[in-house]
Length: 499
Image 1 (cartoon, helix red, strand yellow):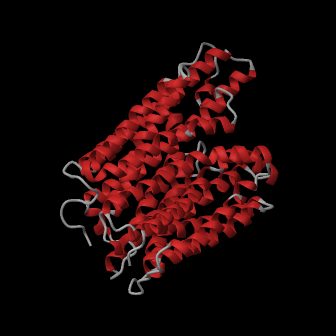
Image 2 (cartoon, helix red, strand yellow; image 1 turned 90 degrees about the vertical axis):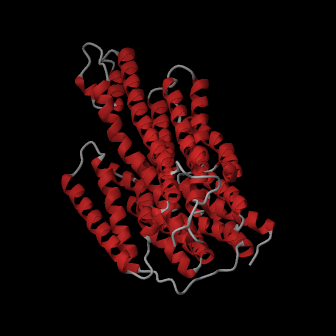
């Protein structure tokens, strides 16, 4: 069934709004967390899980939800996800205890996991022309960057006028509008009952992914629990091994590993993960540094990192428009390389020039926006339509892990490089070597050499971040460059697509 041009682009607007909600809720609590922790009387551990319950549960469920969408129909999955997301938003907004809010955030992740693969799969089955589909996917991909950047800004604005629950209430009108619009513009539900959704495989994937995330997050803590790390690693290893073994035996696997033999598909998956790692890392470190060192408010810091989205939007559109002519290599590998250049400019001007700093953020966003938009095209253009749900799930797991790993690992890597490189002024306590926060606390006590200590700590922190981000960007550009070195114009790899 061919859908009119108007309905196709209206559908794109609806599913992009769904993706915007999902990505907003990944970052919207960064500014609201201190307020809601105080109001609910949450401990530091409960505060951490208020943030983490959402991405951890979503990452664990994504793979199974995409394949389930292939079976029951992506329109139905999107509508179910919207309803769950709306109900969970209400529960989160009116939570009266930390435990209730953590449970609501986990429930919110269930709705997000149902929605997210369906958004991309609906684009794949609705836009039949490759050039038009590339543009549509570019718009979709840009929403991930825009949503992440808008989260801290919207949160800061709402907290100036309303209570913390308002950061969840704003989801409700968007959900209601999206449900009505989906019923009107989405193509008829097209379930494939011949597809078998294996619940056991989905649970094994959940165990493996959640175990891995918990292991990463616990390892990155300053005071990790060895027993918890060992249990999480064991769960991830057993779950992953059993999952992979089961997939090879099933006639309808949850994940067909053959799709990874396509180099363009694999390059797209890697690019999505590397790009989200870089964006999450830049947001995390830039907002943290300017609030700690420069005294920025959360809202002002949020506006600063929004420059990444400003740079990403035009290049994402341009990438989708020229992909059929230039191919994936210059856009993915070149985009990641340009992101590295922008990151260098950011780090060189943290404390010298706000103009050059913002320029660096825009350049970084420009490179990563181009890479992200066509990474989605590389993934969806190299699988048959009947595998759209599976492919979109793989991409979104890559997105979530890129962001999760950035938050989990950057802290420990930054601390290690910072501690090794800081040059403490004479007479300053060794405690300043522990972290930037420790150094600033000592400087604030007035018992240390304030300005010299702040300068030394900031320079070491900036250098540590530069080292980590450049390594990540270089590895991403090199890996995707090798995979795409023989790739021509368009999104599909020359030669057969693995079925």
